[in-house]
Amino acid sequence: MSENLFASFIAPTILGLPATVLIILFPPLLIPTSKYLINNRLITTQQWLIKLTSKQMMTMHNTKGRTWSLMLVSLIIFIATTNLLGLLPHSFTPTTQLSMNLAMAIPLWAGAVIMGFRSKIKNALAHFLPQGTPTPLIPMLVIIETISLLIQPMALAVRLTANITAGHLLMHLIGSATLAMSTINLPSTLIIFTILILLTILEIAVALIQAYVFTLLVSLYLHDNT
Image 1: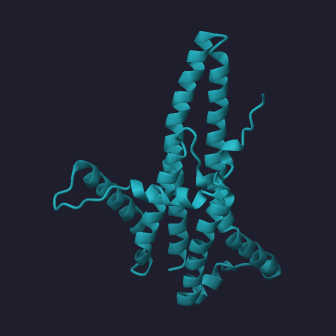
Image 2: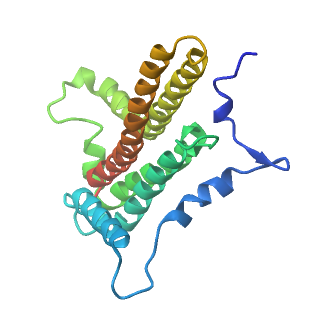
C-alpha cells in the first residue's frame, strides 16, 4: 500500500472541527515561568537566551524600533517551539502551512511599512528611486522596487514553509527507507539509520535557525522604516 508523503501536512481535525488553533496555542504552555524570587537553572538559561537574542536584534534599532522588542522575542519563541514540536512523531507542524506563515508575515511587514510612511515619508519614497538613476530608467525602476517591496512578506512565508516542509519530507523518506531495509539488509539499515539521526539533529538546528531568520528579517524591515 502506497503512503501519501503529504499526509502529515494536512491540518488535523477533532470531531470534524479543525484543531489547528489548539495546536497553535499549545507551545506557549510549554514555556516555564517562575513564581519564586530565585530562579532555577532552566528559568535562568531561558532568560539568558531571551536577553541575548533580544540584544542582538535590537542593537541596530532606535527608540521607536525597540518598542517592537517584546513582539519580536515572542515571535521567535513561538516559531522555534512550533518547529521543534513538529519534529515529534505523529505531530503536526503549523509552520508548514503557507497560509499561517503569510498570516504572520503580512501584518508584521505591513506594520513596519506603514510606520515608515508615517514617520519618514521622504526616506520611504526614496527607496523606490535610487539617487542618480537615468531618466529613461525611472519608470522601470519604480515598478521593480514596488514589486520587490510587495513581495517581501511572500518571501518570508515561502522561505519558512519550504525549509520546514523539505526537512520533514526528507526525514519521512529516509525513515521509510530505514523501515523497508530492516528486513532486507541489516548493515545498510544501520547506515541509513545513522543518516536519519544526523538528519534529525540537522532539522533541530534548521528549526531554530529558520525561526531566527524569519524574526531577523522582520527586524531588518522594521529598521529600514524607523
